[in-house]
Image (cartoon, rainbow, N blue to C red; front, side):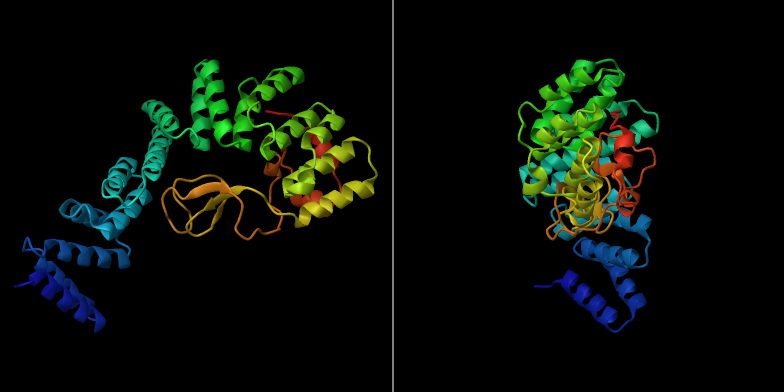
Amino acid sequence: MSRPELTGLLAAQSAERMGNKDKAQDVYKKLLGDDRTRFVGIVGILKHRLEVGDTKTALQLAKKAFELKPGHEETQIILLRLQTSEADWEGVRNTWKARFDRKRISKQEYVHGTAVTLFAEGKKLLKEGNQEGSLKVFEANKLAPSLVPAAVLAAQLKNGDGDHRNANRILTKTWNLEPHPDLAQAYTELEPDETDQHRHERFKKLIAKTLMHPESRMTMAELAISRGDFGVASHELENIHQDDPTVRTFLIMAAIEKGKGSPDQNVKSLLSNALTAPRGNQWICNTCQQIHKEWQPVCISCQAFDTLTWRREEEETTSLPSSIKLLPLINEEDFESETLIEDNSADEIINLGYKLG
């Protein structure tokens, strides 16, 4: 039986192996004229356009190849990456669905990835001044309540519209699924002018179902420091800095000890420990392990879609991050954590007062 698509592909590949890319492209172009060989021709030209960096043409070719064979996995992956690079989130959503329909991804991956496209599209629309973006963000939050950045923005939008009850509900629901410092910061911003006592009572409700989670303990410790109640802060932190030491837990302990008036040697010892402690949870790509300062829909290193999770490194590094962001509920005031360590002093932490919001 005649297999013109195979014959043409072999001829093109032979030319490529000989280094004659022009001849290979001529072969691929000839394949476009036959329905039986058109897909092979398009893919051959597509890969060449990718090699020379012509992503605009490559995207159009990938779309055409996808139309011809929507179940072809390599084409799906190429199209997905080109669409994410162009922030074509509606296109990404369609390609993602095709992958799910052909059982390339699980239902959980499909739902979460769809939420990511809606959130990214919503942010883009809002940045352009299109308030339809709010609906996309709310839909993303509804689909994937554990998607922290979507919950934060959804709550901010609700709060901005005066819907404090639903803003609170969104953050609480996501906190119960995925306690995260960004959620604590957003929760603080719901009532920026409240008293310390009122804030303490509100946060007790937030963490009610996650009392023993390290993030809950650190958050309550930071709140106690903001009130100048260092004894309570120490109690809230319990033994986390011993059982699960990280840079952040040691910095909190250093602030507590300094606030309690402990000898400088004790404070310096904790700061020294912070210098060599694991960083703790970060946004990390599950595909290439790249660490990100903040969540992104696409990995900045390998360009994989929806692969960032809030977790620890597989082999944790001990170098100190460049920002006091590790203590999310304090007023940063351009404070750099390296200075804190180099100066062997916790004065800056105490002077900042752990003012929330």
